[in-house]
Length: 242
Image 1 (cartoon, helix red, strand yellow):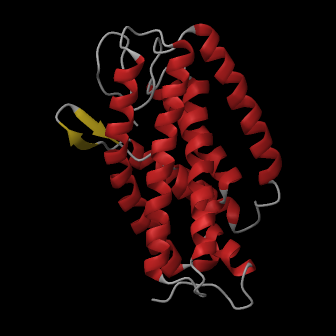
Image 2: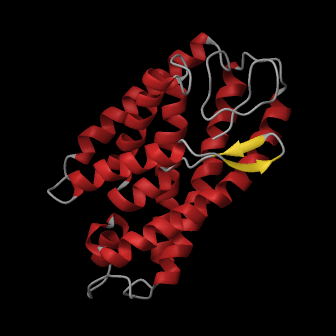
Image 3: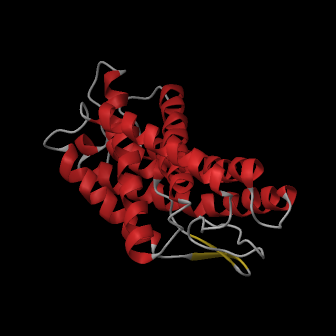
C-alpha cells in the first residue's frame, strides 16, 4: 500500500508518522483495538486443528510478500495487502488478526509504518481490506450458482475481492486524511493519487491472490474458508476441479 509523506507525494509501504494528526491517530487506534477485540472473540469458533496452522502460514506468507514491491508508475510501487487473501483462506475474523500481527511486527521491529499510525494502518489494511474483500467474495459466491465452484470462478472471485479490498483500504486512508491530515498536500490530490494508484496496485494484488487461492484450493480445498462457506449453501460437497 502506498502513502503520502508530510512534505511530498511519495510512496511508502505503510502510513508513516506525521501523515495524520494525534487526535485522529488516537481515534483510529481505538477503532483498531475495538475491531481486533471483536475479531479475536469471533475467531474462536473458526480456529480448529486445521485452521490454526493455516492461519500461521497465511501470516508468514503475507509478511514475506509484503516485503516485495512491484512497480506501478514512475516513482510509485505497491505490495500485497493480503486482506482478501487472508479472508478467503482463513475467514475474515482470523484473517484480520493475521494482517494485524504482520503490521505490528513490521512497525515495531522493522520500522515499516509509523507507530503512532499503527491504529490507522490496522484499520485500513487489517479491518477494511479484509472485511470488504470478504463481503465481495461472499456476494460473488452467491451469484455463481455452480457447485462445486469452478476453478475459473474461484480465481475471478479472488481477483475481484482483492481489487475491491485494496481500493476500500485506500478509501480508509482518504477518510482519515480528511479528518486529520497533517501534511500540506490537499485532500483532492491525496484522494486522486490514492484511488488512482491503488486501482493499479489492486490489479497486482488480485492476480497474486487469485493464483495463491487457486493453488491452495487445488491441493487442499478443505482448508479454504470460502469453499467451506460455499459448501454450506449447497447440498453437494464443494471443491475445485483440477
